[in-house]
Image (cartoon, rainbow, N blue to C red; front, side, top):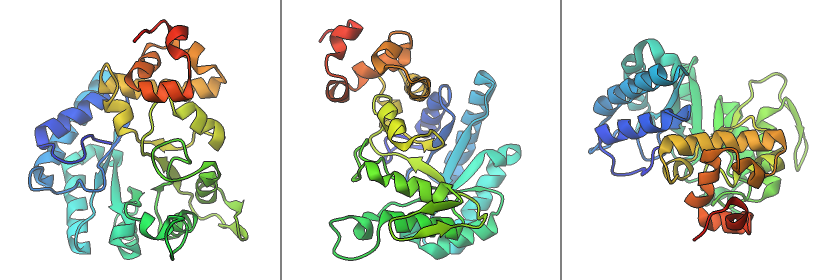
Length: 296
């Protein structure tokens, strides 16, 4: 996630993308980014593509960008999508389209899906808490919202952080990820069969960093997600690229079944995440300073 989400003009926005891509692979616009007066789409997206090409040349890796095409009407949304595909040219297959599905509504999601059948459709659920929050007097759950997103053709949807990030949620919210990625799942009310309908990727974001990820993956049971961590990358003490690398290392730590403290001793970027996010480190790994030889 490009951070800060508001205020960046085209040149610093593209530079922020480039700095992250040196260590990571997937960058997304956030829900309010798209075509802002201080960062117009026609100026920023060609610069982002130039940043993508430079990062791909330097790292030898493919890079991905999720562009927010949400607009105040469907025709404008489609026009933005067409412009972005033209701007990215031969690398248009490395672009996803982000739609604020709760704000824009189901019709905006299905319109984008039908008009751009070959693009990854990224459903951002900003605003959904008005009806899905347990404190809401009426509405439906985030589990139901996720099911609807799959029916509408979303390639991926945000599923929260299951109590490991800053968003409202708890460990049992992993059911939200399971219902959209599996062909059959026993939900809280009944058994859901999808009969071969394309799965939807769980996307996690909201206060995540390298220190929180091992526990998150342990609870979920797999790493087949898109992890978007703005603060977890740009808040790293060394650089956005180091922050992105620390996220990769956190996943590898969980995958290897390693102790995070011991893992940090051999993985510099992950180790520096402890110093980057000391409050999280104190909470999750008490005594980490002594174990890693870091002092206040």
